Amino acid sequence: MNSKSHSLLALLIITCLLAVPVSAFGKKGKDHYDRGMKAEQNQQWEQAAQEFTLALAADPSNVDYRLHYQRAVFNASQMFMQKGRSLAEQRDYVGAYNAFRQALGYDPVNQLAVSEMERMLRLQEVKEGRSPAPAAGGGAEDNGTGGTPAGPSTARTQEAVPAAKPEQVRDIILSGDLKGFIRKLTEDLNLNVIFDRQSFATPRTIDVNLHDVTTAKALDYIFLQEGLFFQKLDRRTILVADQARRPQYQQLVVRTFYVSNADPEKVKNLIGLVLPASVGRPQSIVVFDKDTNSLTVRDTAENVQLIGELIRSIDKDRAEVVMDVNIYEVSRTSLLQLGNQLGSGTFSLGGSPGLSVLTSNAVTTAAQTGVNVGSILAGVPTAAAAALVIPPSVLTAFQSKNNARLLASTQIHAFNNE
Image (cartoon, rainbow, N blue to C red; front, side, top):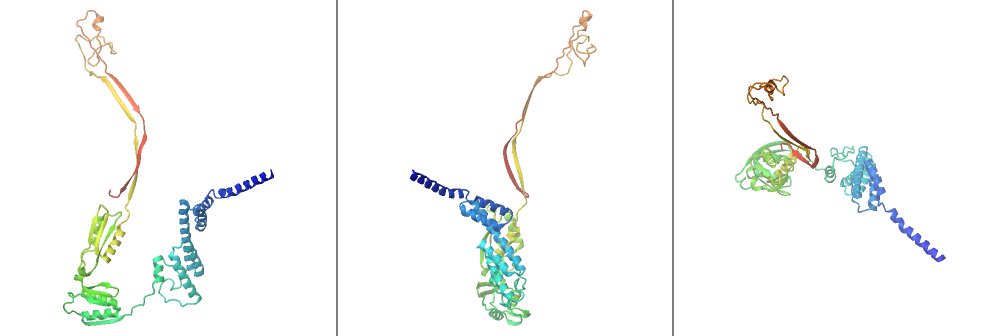
């Protein structure tokens, strides 16, 4: 008996132990999810991210948990980014570094946070005097204000690209052979140059007098004056030719642009007006397709890029009107009329008027007709006469049935001028 009681007690304990995890994880993170939703409504993104993390750990397959978790960690990262910028403006570079580090912890792919952390370290070193301050005029960190770049591209440019060495200005006085001077200026720029044979078949001279200009700017002025252009062949080599020879050397590219709202035919006409053909630059080839609402452009890479920016600037959303349309079954009414109408004329069979049983004065007239019984009351009638009146008779059948129910409901989208 004692052994049996021990067995039952052990079985009860095992059952209780097995039931604990079931009761504990039966909700699968519902409590954490509810607390996370409350924190999300209050825009407490740090707490919301922690609660959604626990909820997702309890139920990794729950799509709602995962979506709210991703949203919370992103907003928490942006919150710490804003906090870091605010601290950087107050010249608290250590606090800003920690804020950017927390932002990176919530969003590991936030490369802007990485660059800001590196920038805060450099600014802190400058503040403590452990490294010299950069030259003035180089950006936000050069003037010591601790400003933050407006976006990732600005930050990467400031951090990754070193400050370019300013070109020295000089006086350039040239008088003589054009090819020789172009070759000399390109050598000063550490460039290789080749000349188009047809453009320089005959010797060409030049006479310029420029002051306080850089070598590159002087070369641009010479090309403009002489009607020349250069085509880049590789990183250090250019080809120089007349503007008229540009189509022979410029590399053309083909690209298709898809427009969402604009009319492709109108966009093509606009491109022709904005980028007309000129000397040495032929008209851009633009083909539109209304079926796919697209434009295919064939031109130089620079012009294709310019056309793309133009298309993006004019392809804006159009004014749209949304109309709700409901179709109902309405009531029906039927009316049926049956009858005869013999008219309002007098039916006279002869004799003289006498007593009319259908008139108030007992006199039969042309307007008031009836049965003439005057001769009957007076004795022997002088003539047999009778007036017969048959009143109009009408039979009306009216049926009314009211029935209204919704048959269909839809929305109609209409754009401007459509």
